Structure formats: structure tokens, C-alpha cells
Length: 185
Image (cartoon, rainbow, N blue to C red; front, side):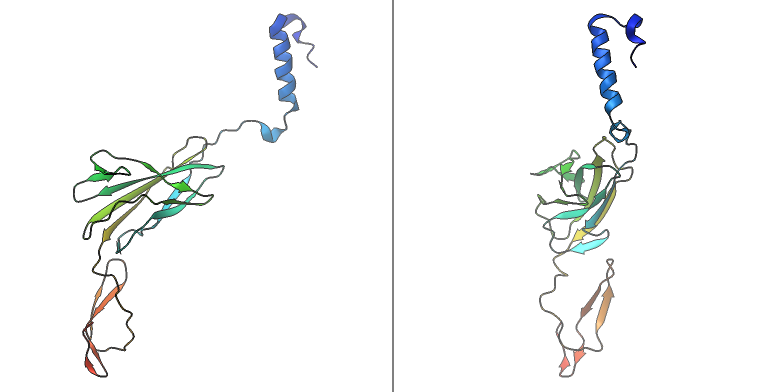
């Protein structure tokens, strides 16, 4: 089979070439190298875009790739001063932080102390094992608001109340009248 080598490659080069040729011929077709040109996808699930949050202990989402996912990184930007969280402090330079990656989801838990009334943007990107970055990054802009934290559930029926439709699709109900008269909240 390697008879064509007799006159072309000599000495140690001939032996090495024979060994490599035999090794390649023994590989199944599935083991041959193929280029991974498809970038991964990434999505932020928590916090939802345009949401109001009163507590955010972690940022999480999903990521997928046609071969294998290598990493997900996030950038957290505070819009009031355009600074970025670097994992320990706010800085003027954009910082990409490594998230913990599972087969189809990711989580970042070293979040800053969120400031009430502040707006933040989180950006996530994913990289596959071939080094392809996600073609589209996922972003979520949210407001930290302790005002909308429920303190007690609404257990009394109400009428004649005021309500406000919030940006996140929830309704804030205040006051109103119940069977016993006016209610305070």
C-alpha cells in the first residue's frame, strides 16, 4: 500500500511518514477533524429585561452550542455612572466575569450590592470549545426597587382602588375599599 514511498522519502522521514500514514488510515471517519463554524447562543433569563427587582442574588440564563459550550461571561454595568462591576469593585473599564456553566444553563453569583433606585444593564456572551463567540450577545436592563417588595399578601377583596401598570407587566394596587370601609394598602 505504501510502495510509492520507495523512491521519494528516505531515512527517518520515511519511517515517520509510514507511521503517520498508517495511523490516519486506521482512524474511523468520525474521528477526522471537522471545523466548528457555528457560534453558540446565549440568553439572560434572570433578571428579565425591563424588569424591576427588589432582590437579585444571582444572574442566570441559558446557553447552547452544536458541539460543546466552553464558557459564558457576563458584564454588569451601572448606568448612573457607566461603571462596570469587576467582581470586587466598580471600575470604568468593562470587565467580563466568568459564570458557572452547566450543559444548558449558566449562573453568576458574585453580584454587587445593588443600590435601590439604580438601573443596571447585564450583558452575557458565550464561547464554544472551538473559540467561536456568540454572534448575538444577550442584554437585560433592570431597575432595583425596594418600593415594590410585597410585605403582606392581599387577602381582602377590594373595590374602588387605584392601580398602576408597571413596565414589567405587573399591576401595583394601592388603597381601595373593602366590606369594612377604606383599606390602607
